[in-house]
Image 1 (cartoon, rainbow, N blue to C red):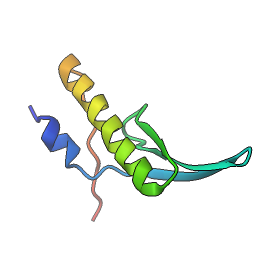
Image 2: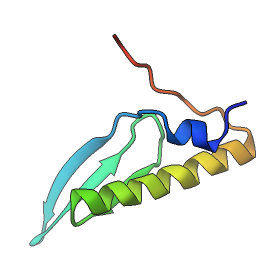
Image 3: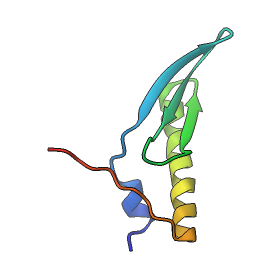
Image 4: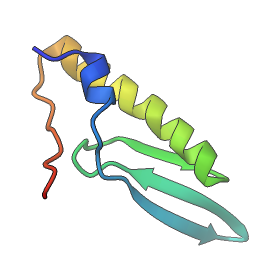
Length: 76
């Protein structure tokens, strides 16, 4: 069974959206293969750091509960 470090180092696709709402703007990042892993930030760097934290928490919970974690498919 693979551990947290293995999954953290996989190259998951990240979807980025720039959102402007009521005079505020921010970035929203998601990892489509990992449902519920969502992050926000005023800058891309801030959002990416938040995303890494959300991904780690999500992966730890799945590993703890024995839930299968999807892996990205790298096409050549």
